Image (cartoon, rainbow, N blue to C red; front, top):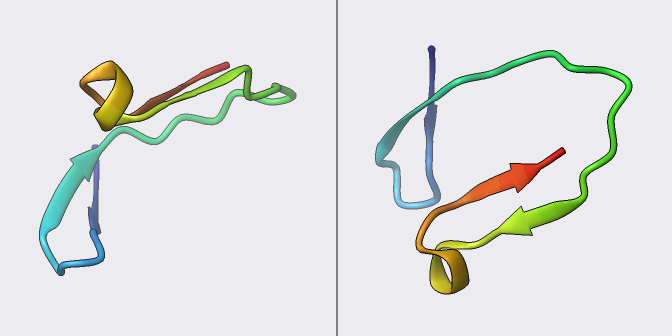
Length: 40
């Protein structure tokens, strides 16, 4: 687990993984998918 701060200064927890080499296939946005994420 890691912690980052968003643009408003709010603390956000996240999981950071190393998975290389890889290609980002899709970016999931909260506005369209209900959550933020990436598909590798």
